[in-house]
Length: 230
Image (cartoon, rainbow, N blue to C red; front, side, top):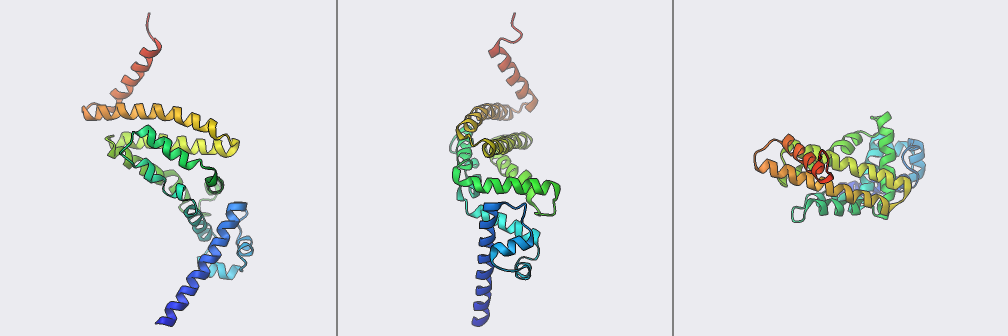
């Protein structure tokens, strides 16, 4: 039994070593050129060993993305920020965004967005990535907003808006490198999101329809700007 355990441990360490080398390669070079041959070369191994350990190129790339995420603790723990209920929503959103756009996270974000672009055209290339990118974070944010007092439907819609904001600004950041500019846009948007959440929560507490909250928000904005006043 001891010999078996030792052999299994040695095999696990060998697998982890190969995976770490592949992660380093993908963070430097992306995943677009990640053929099995290229990955084997980067890992100092061969096609046969990679298939033995990981089953397929697609599964290897997926595992490498997951492993890359673990190297960026502030990205991995982002749900911790959005799920806090001890501070106002706009503060939580700002806290989360500042964790996302740290300079040390940019290699992971580049790899993630490149991989998502490839997966849009070849969904089987990285199984599950589009579901994770499009739904998992929304689910986390939606659950946090429900705990904050929003109805499930309102929480889901607002969560989609928040995640869309983050995704768009991440791309803007990668394209421009303008941290201050994208952060200013983010902080202005979060004020509006937080106010809308407050309005929806108030109407939910009062048992009113969410559509009434939207109409009230429009009326408030119109009144503030003098719309419709003679």
